[in-house]
Image 1 (cartoon, helix red, strand yellow):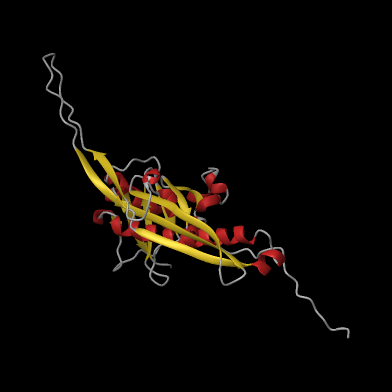
Image 2 (cartoon, rainbow, N blue to C red):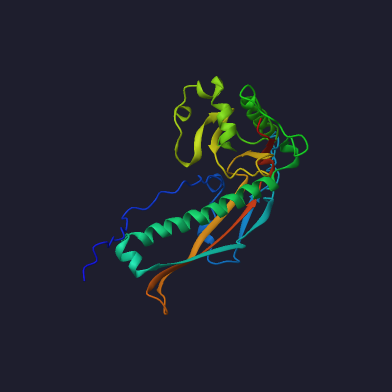
Length: 281
């Protein structure tokens, strides 16, 4: 008997692209300590030298050398996240031979998004109190006429804390970026940064900052956005994928992949951060 109404299913060889957020905060941290991580629960010891005395020279014998003063900070690798997914044989055979690779990319994106939000909150909470420009009780409501000026005010906060000019960054939400795009001081300075949106969330330069765009800027239900500025010296971050295994499921015709990712972060220079609380107009 013939099945004249049979309609075969079509398995697409293409995967639907996702509309993903850009992750930026991890790239704005000091990551010099990652090679020292071995497992969850590790501790990375960070030394910081104190000031060295500068003395007058009169031609007489100089004083005995002073001992270097240093302070120790511990970076705890106290966060651990895992993923564990399966790909059925029929999916792999009929849909896309690169499905596992695509799934790994999705797992990586999900992991990075969790870390990005964690680091944003960590930097917010670790900023020096004297470097906070407007708090929750009286948030700034910037306009296209003064958004740039408020970035200058953030920069002044860092100037007063002796933070170096080189390498300064600020992370803003899309709506604040929209205000800057209406200001000739931002779009008209002729730099290559400001002529096109770049990769990694970097969208321009203004007021001495490299401007990064992110939808992970901390906020409370769409208000009280915490715009954080600083330098890479402000925070330390270390991560490691310590386990990655592909295995065959015993009770199913499927392959699976699982991974364990450990990380830790700490604000080591609170005065190298400044925060501005803003509401949309």
